[in-house]
Length: 178
Image (cartoon, rainbow, N blue to C red):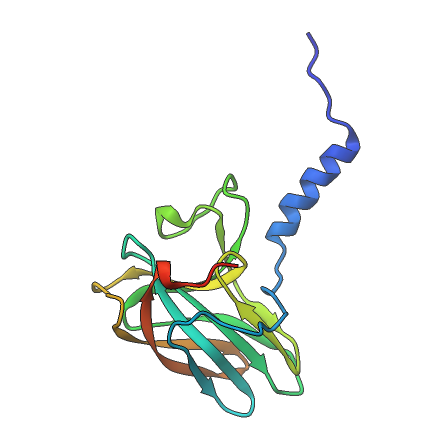
């Protein structure tokens, strides 16, 4: 019995879906008209601004999901390269992909999230970090974190100053669903 061959069009559709989800692209470029009802923080200066910063603790207490709007008010493109926090051993940008793809994520529940080296924020534009699209995750927490606690988070950029924010952590269930 010979193996069945997939039509070339089916192979192309599957390849486009896999490669498209792995492409090095920024999360949503559409700025939302509303954010979750949780506490938000806006920081930064005339060049790079990070607004609507929210932190959500995953139910297992091992990961903090950060959402925000990153705005580049400069004349040149900026690479958003991630960040850091004193409460986390690892902070990185993650893109959402299909769960069956292999991942070297630092937490077992990160199936479907692949770490990205950077996201491009074009001149005079914004990107939105949001759950299920592209977000910054804090993992390998160094200490227990609880909803209501304030944590410090730093957002890092290539060729532009970092932006620091103090953010109140909310429970994962408090995030707004799209």
